[in-house]
Length: 414
Image (cartoon, rainbow, N blue to C red):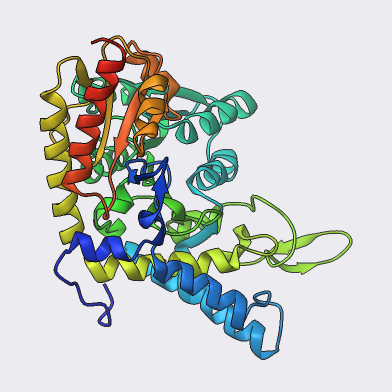
């Protein structure tokens, strides 16, 4: 955290006042937004920062010598500095992408093609989001690497015995795993996983799309090789995300896309590449969105992650308790270390009906497989409902969810 940012006492009502959308009505009822894991709401500070850029200084970056371009370039690069400090890494190790999904695809198509050879193996877990599964399936089919799936326990944690088995033949070159499951809420022990991977001669990629929202992330302490997250889950805008890669790895990786701003020189015959991170940022970037991400980082750091984590632990504990008290509700995932995502089923009622009827009460949850279809099937289900929490979520809103589920049961005569 920079010296200019001072944590304040966590005050959820004050925080809620920073989010204009939370004053809106849904079906004539006060909005209860419990879908932050899909995409979080935006505070006024983020909205204002983006509007100010568009109204007062917008121009393309890295291309102009005029005042507007220079100021906008500074703002864009300042956002990179904020991300680097946020993750405790060097600025040249931060690549701006559209989202975590693009970041993983970038690694698969650059590191994967350049550093993995046919017969090498990539290991993922059973609880991965499609974004950390499909790109590796594509690399398998295109490049001949093997894709292995490590099992999870009944509690929703990494099965270490199976992990050992997957690595036993010495062919694994990359472990790609979620930092926090978007379905089970499980936090994986990333420091231990990184050491395990390195001890076995493999690199590690962490999908931090959920985790980076709820806890401070120190990538130097974790010793991650790659890390990705999406700005829109961190109270920032859509269309901006981050790929972190260790500098030596980025130096060795070829470009993902070709075009302007990612080159050192171009002739009709050939081109040479810019240094990282610009090698991986072809074309006009998401300028305004990067500014918004920088503002979002300022916002959460001003609140302080120690306070944020404590608030969300309290919310999660409360949600698990009140849902357990409703007959017919089953929550998924019981890891010892879990975050503010609670997927659940309601006996005799399809998850889509649960979500639809809750919506009529002004309560927003998600229903489906949550872009983790193999995990849903692994759990013997076709869909679940999911409540997920943010810094603006209150205990009263969780009580509203519980009351809403009881009304759904009444509709279905349960």
